[in-house]
Image (cartoon, rainbow, N blue to C red; front, top):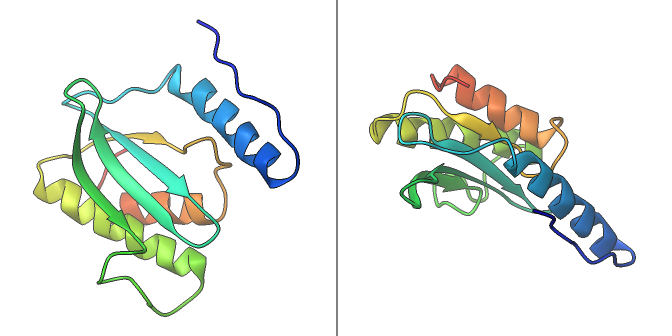
Length: 127
Protein backbone atom coordinates (compact mmCIF):
# COMPACT_ATOMS: atom_id res chain seq x y z
CA UNK A 1 0.00 0.00 0.00
CA UNK A 2 1.51 3.28 -1.07
CA UNK A 3 1.28 6.41 1.00
CA UNK A 4 1.76 9.80 -0.54
CA UNK A 5 2.85 12.93 1.23
CA UNK A 6 2.60 16.21 -0.62
CA UNK A 7 5.91 17.97 -1.17
CA UNK A 8 5.98 21.53 0.11
CA UNK A 9 8.55 24.29 0.58
CA UNK A 10 10.58 25.43 3.58
CA UNK A 11 9.57 24.21 7.01
CA UNK A 12 6.57 22.39 5.56
CA UNK A 13 9.02 20.31 3.51
CA UNK A 14 10.78 19.22 6.71
CA UNK A 15 7.45 18.20 8.28
CA UNK A 16 6.55 16.27 5.11
CA UNK A 17 9.91 14.47 5.24
CA UNK A 18 9.34 13.56 8.90
CA UNK A 19 5.87 12.29 7.98
CA UNK A 20 7.35 10.11 5.19
CA UNK A 21 9.94 8.65 7.57
CA UNK A 22 7.28 8.01 10.22
CA UNK A 23 5.15 6.11 7.71
CA UNK A 24 8.23 4.08 6.78
CA UNK A 25 8.96 3.26 10.44
CA UNK A 26 5.32 2.36 11.17
CA UNK A 27 5.37 -0.34 8.47
CA UNK A 28 7.54 -2.38 10.85
CA UNK A 29 6.61 -1.13 14.34
CA UNK A 30 3.31 -1.97 16.00
CA UNK A 31 2.23 -2.13 19.62
CA UNK A 32 0.65 -5.20 21.20
CA UNK A 33 -0.87 -5.67 24.66
CA UNK A 34 2.31 -7.50 25.78
CA UNK A 35 4.64 -4.94 24.23
CA UNK A 36 2.99 -1.59 23.46
CA UNK A 37 4.51 1.14 21.32
CA UNK A 38 6.33 4.10 22.91
CA UNK A 39 5.80 6.88 20.38
CA UNK A 40 7.63 10.21 20.59
CA UNK A 41 6.25 13.40 19.06
CA UNK A 42 8.60 16.36 18.95
CA UNK A 43 8.00 20.01 18.11
CA UNK A 44 10.38 22.92 18.34
CA UNK A 45 9.25 23.71 21.88
CA UNK A 46 7.70 20.56 23.39
CA UNK A 47 8.06 16.79 23.39
CA UNK A 48 5.31 14.23 24.01
CA UNK A 49 5.68 10.51 24.74
CA UNK A 50 2.79 8.02 24.72
CA UNK A 51 2.61 4.28 25.37
CA UNK A 52 -0.02 2.94 22.96
CA UNK A 53 -1.62 -0.47 22.52
CA UNK A 54 -2.35 -0.43 18.78
CA UNK A 55 -4.58 -3.51 18.79
CA UNK A 56 -6.99 -2.07 21.35
CA UNK A 57 -6.40 1.49 20.20
CA UNK A 58 -5.79 2.80 23.72
CA UNK A 59 -3.16 5.04 25.24
CA UNK A 60 -1.85 3.35 28.38
CA UNK A 61 0.42 6.14 29.62
CA UNK A 62 1.60 9.53 28.46
CA UNK A 63 3.84 12.39 29.50
CA UNK A 64 4.92 15.68 27.97
CA UNK A 65 6.74 18.88 28.73
CA UNK A 66 3.30 20.47 29.17
CA UNK A 67 2.64 18.40 32.33
CA UNK A 68 2.52 20.48 35.48
CA UNK A 69 5.36 18.50 37.08
CA UNK A 70 7.74 19.28 34.20
CA UNK A 71 6.43 22.59 32.80
CA UNK A 72 8.82 25.46 33.36
CA UNK A 73 11.48 23.07 34.65
CA UNK A 74 15.16 23.78 34.82
CA UNK A 75 17.58 22.92 32.07
CA UNK A 76 17.58 22.85 28.31
CA UNK A 77 15.23 20.90 26.04
CA UNK A 78 17.30 17.71 26.32
CA UNK A 79 17.06 17.84 30.10
CA UNK A 80 13.31 18.27 29.85
CA UNK A 81 13.16 15.31 27.44
CA UNK A 82 14.95 13.21 30.07
CA UNK A 83 12.31 14.19 32.61
CA UNK A 84 9.55 13.22 30.16
CA UNK A 85 11.23 9.85 29.55
CA UNK A 86 11.48 9.09 33.24
CA UNK A 87 7.87 10.20 33.86
CA UNK A 88 6.40 8.14 31.00
CA UNK A 89 8.38 5.09 32.17
CA UNK A 90 7.07 5.54 35.71
CA UNK A 91 3.48 5.87 34.47
CA UNK A 92 3.87 2.87 32.15
CA UNK A 93 5.21 0.72 34.98
CA UNK A 94 2.21 1.78 37.09
CA UNK A 95 -0.06 0.66 34.21
CA UNK A 96 1.64 -2.77 34.20
CA UNK A 97 3.89 -2.31 31.17
CA UNK A 98 7.38 -3.79 31.43
CA UNK A 99 8.59 -3.75 27.79
CA UNK A 100 7.83 -1.45 24.86
CA UNK A 101 8.65 -1.04 21.17
CA UNK A 102 10.25 2.34 20.50
CA UNK A 103 8.77 4.49 17.73
CA UNK A 104 10.93 7.55 17.11
CA UNK A 105 8.17 9.20 15.08
CA UNK A 106 10.25 9.81 11.95
CA UNK A 107 12.84 11.82 13.86
CA UNK A 108 16.53 11.00 14.02
CA UNK A 109 17.62 8.98 17.05
CA UNK A 110 19.77 11.76 18.45
CA UNK A 111 19.47 14.68 20.83
CA UNK A 112 16.12 14.94 22.59
CA UNK A 113 14.79 11.66 21.16
CA UNK A 114 17.82 9.72 22.42
CA UNK A 115 17.72 11.51 25.79
CA UNK A 116 14.08 10.52 26.28
CA UNK A 117 14.76 6.90 25.32
CA UNK A 118 17.80 6.63 27.58
CA UNK A 119 15.89 8.07 30.55
CA UNK A 120 13.04 5.62 29.97
CA UNK A 121 15.53 2.73 29.89
CA UNK A 122 17.18 3.93 33.11
CA UNK A 123 13.75 4.11 34.75
CA UNK A 124 13.18 0.42 34.00
CA UNK A 125 11.40 0.13 30.66
CA UNK A 126 12.80 -2.52 28.35
CA UNK A 127 13.15 -1.77 24.65
